[in-house]
Image 1: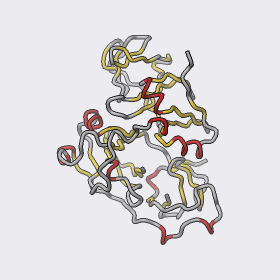
Image 2 (image 1 turned 60 degrees about the vertical axis):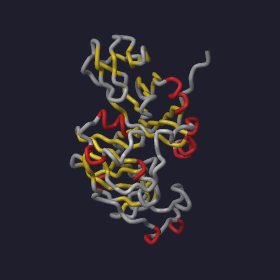
Image 3 (image 1 turned 45 degrees about the vertical axis):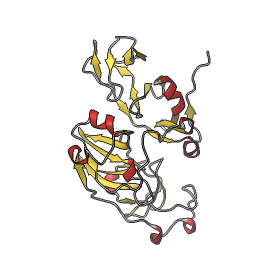
Length: 188
Length: 97
């Protein structure tokens, strides 16, 4: 990846200039998600869509079928942490702590995995799946797991803060973030 | 470390033969190795794609200041498509896959 203005070479995954006049600079990452079209347009009915001739017709929601090969990762304050997609497929929600309390939410129906801060009004919320819905234990509010908005209960209308994350091949993440920590389920 | 936004750069994809860790200029691809720039892409509304994008297709979705855009992964696959220079809600971005 290179920019035309300075011919600096950039790392896709790091967003960092690796060689050239801007070496060492970092691009600002913008929060995004990879998910299925159905759930994206349901959440964003006014969305616009790129219009180009497809180069391949087979990339569908089974792309991540081999979940052991992929991770969802985030970085903060020069540190990095990753959550394996196979763990998320089994758990749907992982409550963790990385630069503060966070939840990693995997939409089993729509595929997208998102990370939110689980802090609300200076309190940490703990999230579970209850009756196929995302709930917090502290107020039993019901949440939209894709938007992070409370849709019922005492916190209705409130929204969790989304955090930037990346989905990557695990082997690539290990190369670019060799010091990354990894979440593992507690053995019972 | 100063942080730049994507808006200052037009980005193209090049074939990296040695990886990003080597700063030896002799190993970095030259201008002849670059794929064409994709910028100012055409975008359409949801109603215009009802028959061309299937519900189970993967998209890269982004929202800036309430404005949402989806980039179907089927349109981003391949070395000539891996970077889309775009603008959303007056913010210049590079959607990469």
